[in-house]
Image (cartoon, rainbow, N blue to C red; front, side):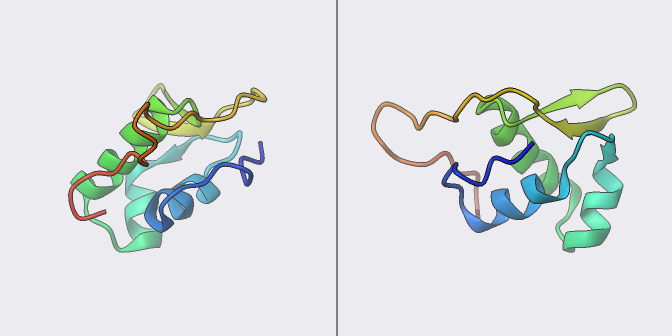
Length: 84
């Protein structure tokens, strides 16, 4: 699914663009990005909250298949995590 119309910070976009219909592990995302586990999991949590990806068995993730657009928080700011 292409969520290119959703505005995201660079680190969230990088992780989201890696996801597809086939499950991808946190370890694979860590290896591809050089982010540590808390960073990758934090970004994935934010993407899940926005409805852009979902966790599947085996602690893997896939991109969502709906046509839903992610909504920004009510105050208009993008969701961010720590140093992201």
